[in-house]
Amino acid sequence: MRLKKITAAAAGLGLALSLAACGGGSDDDTPEVDVAESPEFPEGSKMAELSEAGEMTVGTKYDQPGFGLLNLEDVPEGFDVEVAKIIAGALGIEPENISWQEAPSANREDLIEGGDVDMVVATYTINDERKERITFAGPYYVAGQQLMVMADNDEIDSPEVFQDNPDLKVCSVSGSTPAENIRQYLSNVNSQLVEFDIYDRCADSLSNGQVDAVTTDNVILVGFAAESDGEFKLVGEQFTDEPYGIGIEKGDTEFCEFINETLAENEDAYTEAWESTAGQYEGTETPTLPDADACA
Ligand code: GLU
Image (cartoon, rainbow, N blue to C red; front, top):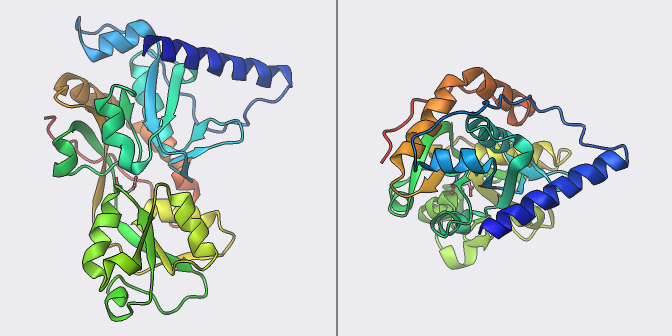
């Protein structure tokens, strides 16, 4: 684990050097993050461990515009990425010392339980089933499930439409809450629900006509619609609440409370993080940081 972290940090450094060498570098318009200088933490805490190491591993999405999307330099960008940087900064960790790890929906609890990541910030809905395996800080944002269809589709405008039209197919991602929730609206789950591991694949199958709709959180769909050059549109109302939490090792209430306090103390950075990422898309509204749940 330790070796892996060092290797990842070294690889990151190599990338930074090679970019500098070719005069490139990312045209990064994300905000500067405050990095605490020699912060102190209780001995033995996760915060002390990470702060002393000066590096951490964060799981996030790699295919979700606005929240976590790999850029051309293979570095993720988005609101979740910026939220992770705020927390790392409070630990005294520079953004470039974060090792990123892709965290597809179905793998997030495994990554946390296995110690592959120190935290997951990945459009991760807080729910009781997941809480049996991990602890959530937050929520830091509340999304809601919606539907996305081709721009010329005027047949689908609510999840109820699938009940009366068994030929219609909807795509979502395995291990996600929307993939579970949509089932109640389908007359034949086996034939109507198509599941992939990442949302990119759902967007591709909508584009090539293999499915008639994609369902997941509205803010994820907004990103795909905005990047589709008018090919996709969102339809209907949101039909769930999806409070996003930061997943950490189960039972580490100290780290959970630290994360909640950090976000509450950095509301300006939180707002800037939103405005420079997901907030760039039309139809999004700058959120205010929701009150955190009790850590458990
Ligand atoms: N927020 C939902 C979830 O955690 C959907 C988004 C995602 O798959 O990351 O399952």
